[in-house]
Image (cartoon, rainbow, N blue to C red):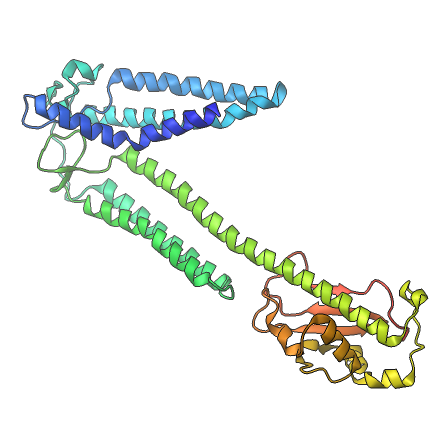
Length: 382
């Protein structure tokens, strides 16, 4: 519980970071004595503090791993908390190091405490540095290409997913949802493409009120990794959800085949006039010739193998009894009773060595083996 709260507040702190920075900028601009106000994001003291906390959280995570493994498994509850804290603090520490590097690159003295300068970058002493002017920002171009390739890869995965499950009713909806969600990567690609322009965008340590800040390197990497994990989770969830539904349909169809097989066995035994002894496993062919003649066609078809969904309206005693037990008037009704097949169901019944076998033939994807039901005991000696 405590770990969940810590992680929650840490995530909320990250998500509201831009809002806090904008509010502080607005406040400082009202009281600053400069034409522009650029906020100092990190100072030397803060970066060092994040470094220490990162080391402490890493040590706490490793300690909890050892305790959970060798002392008390309950300590495993702290693994997620310390693991998330370590990753968050590491991200902030690396972000701060990158920011201080940019300050040094643009000629600023590294501020130890930003409050000494009123949190305003314009007040930090700076040595004039002449940097090479480039026609466009290479970093933004790299991320534009990365996001573009990711979008193309995800589009390919979506098409593969749709083709692989094209038989699944409702797959068009899932495909449409994936396409809409993946537009995020296309949007980010064009956003970085736009930020390639140095005339409209600048680094966050450059002082120019007429240009917008482009996404920094550390933030671009962080967003890319986090959103990659989120989208991986979304796609894995959706793919597993579709597969779960199909597996449920397969098991439902397997249960239907088992019930139908049991019903066919029962009808067969009744028409053969088997006594209690024969139901224990002894085959008995004592049925009268008249009774057998009434359903000889069905017996011959079962011996050769027949798709019972093609029987149509019951034609003999066996089909009539079976239709009565199944509660149908036409065996063609069975074609639409199975949802794990491609098209109409093909339900083949056959007598082999005195045992009845019922096989749902056209299952699209076999789960836990084919849907085949076979009699455990001999119905009739051949």
